[in-house]
Image (cartoon, rainbow over all chains, first blue to last red; front, side):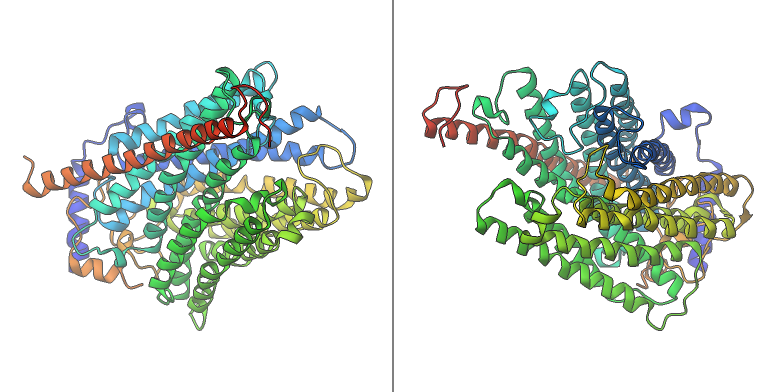
Length: 538
Length: 56
């Protein structure tokens, strides 16, 4: 432990002279990776509750058949804004926040490589989302063409159109700058001895995610730029009346959109690969296979995009290619699920909140994965296309998948960040309520979709009433149970029980070598080879 | 005082940043150019003037 003690004491001594800014300047001019990480996480939390409130309104409208509460156009705005806020405002910033907090600590770096760029990446976001949310108050209302923004519907948006396009450009710029920072940090700031294959899986999955972001966010920006010129400058990229091709937009959008799904989920794989070994008290089974599986999934995500558009009328050869390439993704994903299960096998398991969330992820993400395989089959997809089955599928991937992993990550690292333990009992209540009601919310949507209920409608045929009522009750209960999460964090920060540096006895990794909470500048002196070797016991 | 190691690291950080930013920009411009090229080819094949409905 000599190295650890030395490293920690140096860090603490340095902390006393860290010239930490105070008051509002600490946050507005923030260049410290932990402060920026905290801001990202708080921002993501606020967006999660705004997006969640919109989801509650959607479920309230769908509680009974008939148009109950809203004008159908406003209902379409709700679904569009719910998706844009949850994807770009909640899940992506939450992952960037976790990356900011953890990557420098896990690779033995004092901070991110480009701290000022980091500040800029974050502060773009509040402006982008203020602009996006302001569209609710302009003539014509918020965009209602779906998060996919297909023309010609999207081009018919009113005053909100340029605001939405500009907001998306800003979100994209923020993500690209954040991704550049992550790659540059990992490639150039690792402590001596921290080779690539010693890095924790969370760092690996984020490295691959960052490459995906750099490749596909500019494609989205290009697509919406072309929408903008179609609307304002008389071009006809996607306008059929001018010789353009609306289906081309779908190809370009989904070339971004499918890798985007993996941008949302790959860091979740990293988090689960950190949590399961800790609470199984065993090294991760097949570390290198996990790295290669992640890279394979990322590569395959570039060649499957047209499975989102089987019904637009493409050649049979095209359908076959995209069906088979999509099914190929099941192989590296299967490797991951197998390795996580093998990690649990004969482990000395304990069921603290992070472990519960990781296990729930394992079961429910797999449900979402299997329904994805069903959707990948061309003949079956003609039945499922644009039904609630698709809604159930991607919500299983994103809610008990990505969002449960984010919650698991917060429960895993919160004691490290704050130096305090949270209320374990309340966290378990949060877990069980979330797990029960997320299934009440989304599982019946499979039945609705298979029975033929289309998505994105405010009204439906009466035979769908019962399962819609069940789903809405699940939605309200799930939404309410999420209020426990910020309360629990607030309680932990204010008055949690003090914890030591290695919060969980089975935890490995450099972050657990630092005191809790870690000093303002994490690794002013790089960790020694012995400390790195101890942390890298995968 | 910036050590040799630090200045070398700064150089590498700058280089990686420029390369990645260039890749991002290339994807952005590349997809727009690709659409422009595709649109002009469609126009040539259909023989239609700009703004007219192409024949397929």
